[in-house]
Length: 298
Image 1: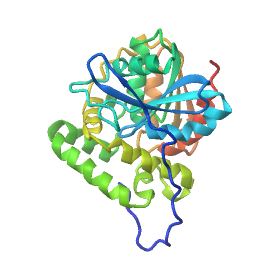
Image 2: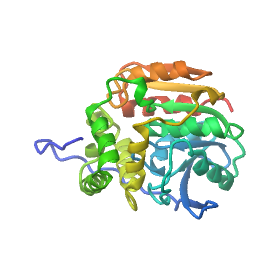
Image 3: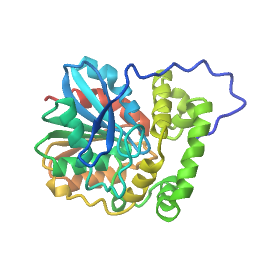
């Protein structure tokens, strides 16, 4: 976790990050609400962005410049139990498409590529495997990998996964406390969890990362607790069924998701390639890879 240093000079005021419009909300057949935001030109080619764990639709704002440059309409949903989306009791990674299909339908997108950051990766792969007629390709930016694919998972990840399984209420309380502190702290408190040098992250990007973290917990903690629990076990995905092109973008200095897992994952996918970003950390991979990911021919 990041901490602030009282000896630092007073930070410059952080940019204000507000949603330009209220998120759209679609109701599922089982009565749940799924909220999503859009970025880029409204008439652009659709692309679905899946946030990390924890995360929200607000992270999609980082893709706005690339979306406008490539005439792409980014559709960024809150997964169940995050932001303004209803929790989905008993949800798994394997049923991810049940929360993506309604968003595609509501946004008028017949088919679209998926771009996922960090903990969004398993949900992108699951959707591609089970909703292949609606998915044209997948880009995983610093994507999480199956736990069996890495032997050096960070200690913090192991702790959160353990709490999610053994004492979910404790983890929920921890997230509540983190969100309270984050709302009153410099953005570096949040950014430091994803970047080796929080001060090197552009101020506007740092403000968006903070807004994303706060939005993730604005109504629920169950989304993050559930995802840490299910991601720590068998994902329930037939990786061999992912037959659309998959590109993995991974930084060599990613301490959150070590690149060794990405090297194993790319070998398990039928049509995937790995693009390494020298010296990039977790957040740096997202910032550096997003422009090329959104430039994918459609």
